[in-house]
Structure formats: C-alpha cells, structure tokens
Image (cartoon, rainbow, N blue to C red):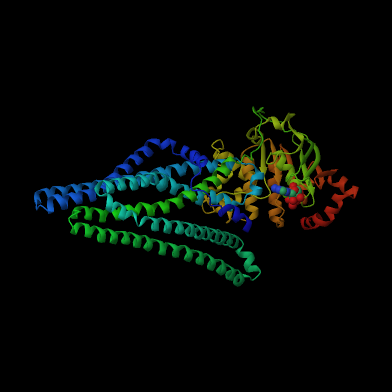
Length: 597
Ligand SMILES: Nc1ncnc2c1ncn2[C@@H]1O[C@H](COP(=O)(O)OP(=O)(O)OP(=O)(O)O)[C@@H](O)[C@H]1O
Ligand SMILES: [Mg+2]
C-alpha cells in the first residue's frame, strides 16, 4: 500500500505542462464565451486598481495643496465610483469563475464515471476502489480550483503587476526603484516558502490518505476487530496515524504562519523606504506629497498579486499532477473486445457450446480454465461442481465475457460469441452471481434495474416465482422499501432471492447461476430450491452448484478440477465412478443429504 501512495500522491511535478494544459483547456471549450468574458472583466478591474493611487496624487497635489475643494470633491467622487464599480465587477467575476469551474468539473466527473462503468472486470482487479474514488473527488476538486481560481486570475495577476509597474514608473522613476529594492527579498522568501509548503502539503495528503484507508478498512471490518478483541490496539494505531497527520498539519500551518507576516514585513520595509527616501525628497521640494501618497498605496497593491502568485503556483502544480492521473484513468482502455459490427440473435434457442476454451487471468501461464469443452443443449440444466478454485465461476466469467478468454471459442446457437457485441451477448444471458450486488434505491429498482420494459406485473411475477415476493410483502413499504448501501439491511438469503428475481424479470433465454457458498438452514434451503427450479425452467442453465438439491436436479453434472472438465454424468453415475465427485460428495454434500432427510 505504502508504495502505492508514493506513486499516487507524492508525484508533484511541474506547475505547467503544455500537453496536459491543452487537454484541460478542451473542457473549457463549451464555456468559451464566459471564459473570455471573465478574462476581460478581470483585466478591467485590474486596471481600475492602480488608477486609485494616481487619483490620490492628483487630489493631493492639484486640489488639497491649492485648496481647491470643489475639484477635490469631484476627485473623491471619482475614486468612490471606481471602488464601487470594482466591487460590482468583483462580485460578477467571482460568480462567473466559480460557475465555470463547477460546470467543467461536472462534465469531467461524468466522463470519469461513464468511463469507469465501461471498463472490463480485469481493470477492477488491479485498481483499488479507494483510488477511483480519489479520482472523482480530490483530483477533480484540484482541477476545480484551477479552473475556478487559477487559470483566469493567474494570467491577470501577471498583468496587474505589469500595469502597476507602468503606473509607478509613469508617476516617479526614482521612487519606483526604491520600491523594487525590497523585491529580491520577497522573491527569495516566496521561493523558500513555496518549496517548504509544497513538501508539507504533500505530507498532509499522504497522512490523510492513510487515515482514510485505515478508517474505511476498520469500519467495514468493525465486527472482526471486536470479535478478536482488538479494539484498544486498533484505536491506538489509529491514534498514532492521527498524530502523524496532526504533525504534518502543524508543519504546514507553521510555514503559512511565517510566510504571511514575512510578506507583511517586506512590504512594511518597502513602505518605510518610500517614506524615508520620499520624505527627504519632498522636503527638498523634489517630490510632491501627492506622489508620496500614491506610492504608499502602490506598495501595498504591488505585493499582493506577487504573494497570490505563490499560492497559484501551488494550485497549478497540484492541478497538473491531478490532471495527469485523471487522464491516465480516462486513457485506460481495459475494455471488452467487441466486434466492429455485431451479429444479432433475435431470440436464442439457448444452445451453448464451449470449444477448447482457456484463460489465464494474469497471463502468467497459470490457467484458471484449460481446454474447457462442453456442449449444452437448449433447455438443459448443467451443474458445475468442484473444489474451491476449480474454475467454476471462471466458466461464467468467460461466457459473459467479463474476461476475454485466451484460446478457444464459445458459440451461442451456433453463432460465435466473439461476433456479438457484449450488450447483445448479455441480453440473452441472465446471471445471478456468487456475490450479489445490490444498489442504493428500492427493492423495485433493484429487481428491474430501472429497465422501463419491465412492467409491474412482470416484476411481481418474477418475485413470486423465485420466492422473494413473500418476504418483500412483509417489509413495511413492500417493493418501495429502501435498500441500504450494499443491501446491508437484508440477509444473505434475501439478497440472493432478489438477485434471482432480477435475473428472471429480465427473461433471458440462458441462465448462469453462481450459488453462494454459504449454507442455509433447511427451510430457506427448500425455498431457494424451489426458486432455482423456477428460474431454470425452460431455459438453458449453467449452475455452479453448492447445494446437493440443485446438483441432483440438474440434467448433467460436470466435475471440474484445476480448470479442466474431469467427470461428466448423473449423480448416480458419478458416484459409481468413485472419482473426484465421489470424494466431494463424501466431504461436502453428505451432511446435506442427511439434513434434508
Ligand atoms: N480476478 C481474478 N484474477 C486473478 N485470478 C483469479 C481471478 N478470479 C479467480 N482467479 C483464480 O482463478 C482460479 C479459479 O477461480 P474461480 O473463481 O473460477 O474458482 P471457483 O471454482 O469458482 O471457486 P469457488 O467455489 O471458491 O467459488 C483460482 O485459482 C483463482 O485464484
Ligand atoms: Mg466461484
């Protein structure tokens, strides 16, 4: 894990990368008009700022010194007007940039989600969920900051500095140089701060990630922690991680606490220089008081954008690193191989044939499926049995093309499955997988998967047929009962029944069923059995069977071992062979046989 963090979080590189920037700017394209407007407004307010000190100078020299109070009132009104205009534009600008930022990241987030949804199963084997969540939250947020604050204002900050310089030099060259005398100190301080702050920030992120990971893991596994009486120990470890996190935050805050007063100090220094040097000049009538007043204001205006630039540098840097990671995810093309043009099957008879199919998940030569051949007639029920890890679930994985097999072919009604688009293929095959996935929503939405083609009657019919209806009816809100995250409020058996109902409601011609390994009590067993029978009726079915009743009611039993088919036959035939099935039966199923009697 620690290594992952290094790759993931610590890579803070350049603050500007042309390639990434060009790609990022594409997201601004739909809002082009607003971006241009924002930049124009920004430049406009930026140019209003330096006008004020200049007006002050005129007020002092031309009106106060000459006691022309009528003229002074005019200038004051002008200054006030400029301020007022600036305030209004600032408001519009803030709104506009935030709006642009939110719009763009919404687009980006949608794109990431849609992309991740279409990635193949093998992608999720190698990518931790937490990392994907980080992409759509932290990383996208970093980009929001850039879109919202960074891009637009960074350009104009540079502009402001230049503009103030122009005004300063126009007003008085000598004093301008005096102001600039403090600049090297500021640049050096900013540089040091930037480096330190970046390291500290990186540390904070690193420790935060550890904190989150630890929290997530231990909330999910709270029962196990309690079971083994490790609460105090785990709490202590959590406290340690917290302490590291706090320390990192202290460091980060320390740099800020030093930097901002430092900037104040430098600008005070510049101010002191101006007052001291300018005061001397004014005394000798070389300089007017108005110019002195103007410069006192310029100094403050001048240092603010420079300080902001340091902040924006950090924003840009974070954004570049984030965009690199986001684009890497978006460019991941671990998708299912689909034909250019899909063949189509209107209504399948349901013949399924595997011909010499092999698969190695990690392409490391370790085969989960090896030369697997099996022909299943329309309407036939085949039970797959075998030790754990024999490759039973893998058969279903390749049939549904969750994983592309390496060798061999699979035919549906004589059509090569590779000629079918994954959607077309999956339209004909219903699955009830080993681990049931339920989604937040209602029982209804979990059965229909929000498919508008499934009517209320069809849904209830499916639930009745699979025995789910009974318990759903007893829920306070029936089919509208809310399903919690991952279906946490339902029992394993109930979840499985919903999963069966889901498969049946979609009325597929072929059913692939991967029974949960967990054993259930005799009554539920009986119900589940009835549900399974109903589900398989009149359909071609491949059932990874763990329950003896399912196995015995199958037309044929296929015994798998180390990814190969080793025995085929009926329950009696296989027992008589005294092979793997016989051994499995003695070890695993015999008890069930006794239970059932
Ligand atoms: N996503 C995966 N990535 C890598 N290896 C995998 C993956 N899924 C399964 N395997 C490996 O492939 C082999 C077959 O696994 P499979 O899930 O098909 O077993 P199974 O027969 O369904 O077992 P069980 O009865 O426990 O469900 C196992 O050795 C397993 O470790
Ligand atoms: Mg399995």
